[in-house]
Each structure stands twice: as C-alpha cells, then as structure tokens.
Length: 478
Image 1 (cartoon, one colour):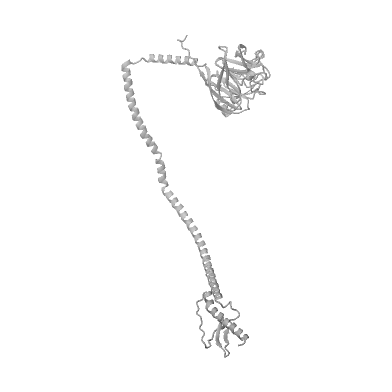
Image 2: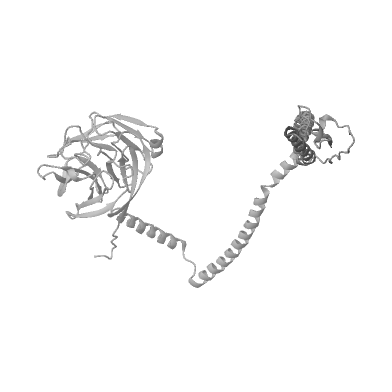
C-alpha cells in the first residue's frame, strides 16, 4: 500500500472514531437522553441534519479502510441540543411575558375596581357618619327634656347634703344650749343675780381704762419696718404724697405733689380709692414753687419749703391761701445740705404724735443735722437740738414720738442707722432694715394716725408698716 493511501485511511479512520465519539458523547453533554445508532453493514438512511454520521466502513481488496460519512449542514449551532434548549427557554420566557401581560391587564382592571370601591366606601362611611349624627340628634331631641329635668335636680343633691349636715349641727346646738343653760342656772344660784346698773357701771369703767391704755400706746420706740405695700405707680422718680395725721376718721383726703422742683400744682383726692383710680377732687395752684419732696400736711394746712430759699410756707388747703411764712435761720438750702439723693432736699418738714418739726443742717453745726420743733401757727422755732450726724450722709429721716430716725442711704440696702431722742437729747446707732423694693427712695414720712411710713419709691407710692415697742406705766408705777 502506498503511503498517501495509508495516510488517507488513517485520517478516515480517525474521523470515524471522532464521529462515533461525538454521536455518543455530545447528547449526554448537552443533557439530551438519546441512544447511539448501531450501524449495520447495509446502508441506513440518515438525515444529514443530525450531525456527523458514519454511512458505512469497509476494506478494499488492497487492504485499505474505506469509510463513507455524511457531514452536517453548515448551520450546526441552530440544530444542536444547546440551541434547542435555549429556544425552549426563550419560548417559556415569551409565554411568561404573555402571562404577565395578561396579569397586568387584570391588575389594572382590578385596581380601577378597587378605586371605585374605595370611593363607594368613603361615600358609605360618610353616610354612616351622617346616620350616626342624625341618630345622636334624634336621641338628643328625645332626651333633651329628660336631661333638663335632671339638670334641675342635680343642684338639689348638695342642698340635701347640706340639710343633713345642718340638721346634725342644729342637734348639736340644741344640746350645747341645754348644757349652757344648765351651767348658767347653776352659776346664778351660787353667786346670785347682779344688778343691771352695777354691771353697766363696771363696763363703762373698763372702757375708760382701755381708752387710757390706748393713749399710752400712741408712742413707742421703733423696732421693725415691714412692707412695702404698693398703692399706686405714677409720676416721675421724685415726689411726695401724704394724708393729714390730725384729720378725722371720716376725712381720708390724699395730696399728691409730683417732682422736686419747678412745680406749683398740688392734686387732692377724697380717698385712697380715688387716688388709686385717679379721680381728682381738687387742684391747688400754689403761689410759690416748692423745693425738694419733704412737705407735710398737718391739721388742714400744707407746709413746704419755698424754692431757692430757706423760707417755710404754711398754706391753708381749706382757704386756698398762705397763712404764714418764715425763714428758718441758718438753714442750708438749694442743695447745700441735701440728703444723699440731692433734689433740693435740704429742709425736711415732718409731723408726729408731738407736733410739727423741721430737720435741716447749718454751717454752725458743721453740716450736721439740726432738729427744730415749730409752732404750727407762726412757724417760730420753739426748741432745737443739734446732732452729730452729717446731713449729706443721710438717705431720709422721719420723726416718731419725738425721736428722729435716719436712714443711711436712699438706694438698695438702706436701713435705719441712727436715731436721736429729743426727750433725752441722746442718740444711738440702730440696725433696722427695710425693703427698698424699687431701688430709689426720695420721700419717707411717718403718719401718726395711720401708724405707717409714706414713701415715694422711684415713681411708686408705697406704704411701710412700723412696729413700736411700748412701755405702759400704771398708776402703781413710781
């Protein structure tokens, strides 16, 4: 055998083996359960679309191997098992897409139906609410009269309870009255009945003794200051307001003088209530401007310091004219010896249980406070006391029972720091605090009738209560 034929036979033999392996192995590789074809010696018709197939194999007389094979068509991928499997998957996907489309159409239709049902449900809910409201309305109409009757009966419950309580109290009162009557009867039997006239005289004697005791209580030593009570808020930071300590109990007129200078208008109010409400009863136009805020109304007249002078003016509030005026000899004026806050407060006029007073300073007393008792009619100085307390170091001062009390400041933290008794001509340092609520005091005067301090506290009209220590002397005391 020639070498070329041997080579061709070897190639054909190899192709036959490859074809046989492919026909048996490829179906299992692609997952197709097909069986191998057994090739008989005779010709078997094979479709060329099924892949490489051996048609026949034989050996020629020369001993050469002759194989007849059928080659597949060129479009092998479209016919193999993988392609069929992919095609089947594609068909399934297409089927699923169609099913999803159908489901989508149904969902859209159901969604529209749900929307329609939702609208109907809302309408139905509204109808139910309306029915419920109508039912409540009908019930309200039906039971309104019954409710009104019940409302009328409800107040009777506490009344009945009170009746029960009152009944118990009445029973107790009856029992106590019986017991008291029995006690009184026993006492009367033991001591006998007093004569009415005798009892009446004893009561009158007791009243007289109480009045005498009250008179002795009018004066005392300052122990405490409480408050303040804010009566009104009005005016500027500086001013004065006052009542007459010698007025009758029915006369509660209030006088109001705003500012410490450049003013002549005095406003009068019939009562504290009118003062608070601003209902003026009368206005006075003084013939002179006043200086400072330390004025005083005493026994129906206004006493004030004439502006830019040491002259004291007595002005009758009933007559509306000046009754007297007098210079206070050697007294400093026009901010020569004012209080700590200034404001032309050199001369301070005040009154207490004893009478009318003037507090000021002189060069002769080295700028220290001088106390003078004045005649209320003529304004003459009846007696004077020279103290050692500098006038410029005093915040304010006031008289109680002939004793001058001096504060150490007009600002927060002020207290009564110094006192001078005109009765004993002695002084002492004290420590009596009080609440400077609005931080700046420009007037502080004692009213003996009200037993209170009137103050002008930074545009607020306030009252302080005072506590006095009384020493009562009886007829047995020597």
